[in-house]
Length: 303
Image 1 (spheres, rainbow, N blue to C red):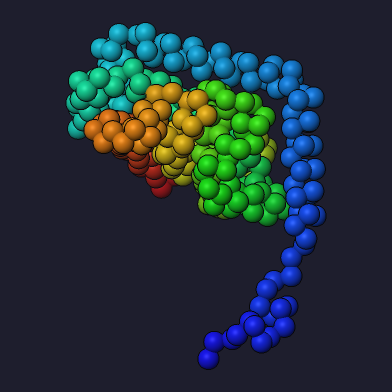
Image 2: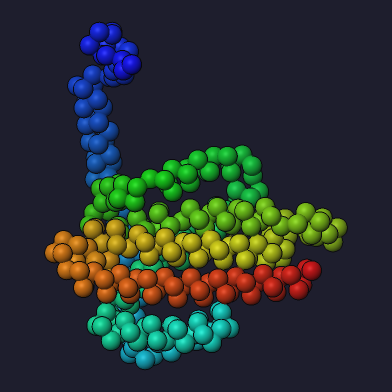
C-alpha cells in the first residue's frame, strides 16, 4: 500500500532542506567571489597561458601549412617505427587519404595539433603525480577520490570553471581536454610502478641503487607497457572531449560536428565523426602495438 503524504507529517515525505533564500545567497557569494578572484589575477592568468597559446598556434600552423604528402609520410614513419606493423602503416595511409579526399584534411590537422598538445601536457602532469602516488600510500588515498570525481563528472561541467577563468578560445578548450583526459595517465602510471616485481627491486637494492636509480633504471622501464596503456587512454579521451570543447572555441573536426548538430546536417556530421574515428583507431592500434613490443622486450630482458 502506497504511503499517502497527505496524511503523514511533512517531514516523512519531504527531505528537510535549507531555505531557498539561504541557498541563493550562498551560491551568489561563491560565484561572485570566484569571478572577483579571476578578475584580480587576470594579468597573471594571461601570462601563464601565453606560452601554451603560442605553442598550440605554432603546431596548428605547422600541421596545416606543411604539404599533405610530407605529413602523411611522417605519420607513416612514426606509425611503423612504433608498431613495426606494415598493415597498420598502410591502413593509416589509406585512412588519411580518405580524410583528404572528403575535404577534411585541414580540420583533421587542427584536431591532431590539439590532441598532440593535450596528450603532451597530460603526460607531463600525470607521470610525476603517478610516480609520487606509487611511492606514497597516503598520497594515493588523497588523489584517488579526486580522480574518481574527475572521471565521473559530466564532461560539460569542466567547461564552466575553465570558461570563467580563461574565457572563450582554444586554450580554455585545450585545458578542459587535459583535465578530462589526465586521470588514466595518473592511474596507470601509479599501477604500473606498483606492479613491478618486488624481487627485482630487492636485487636493485642489493647492487646499491638509490631510489632515483631504481625509478629510472628499473621501475619506469618495467612499467612502460602499463604507462603506454595510460597514454593510449589519454589520447582516446582527448579525442572524445574535442567535440565538447568545440563549444568554447576549439576548432577542427569537433567544431564541424557541433555545427552539424545545430543545423541537422547528417552528412557533415557523419564525415567528421568518421574522421575522428579514423584518428582514434590509428592512435589506438599504434600505441597498443608499441605497448606489446615493450612488454615482449621487458620479458626478454627480465624473463
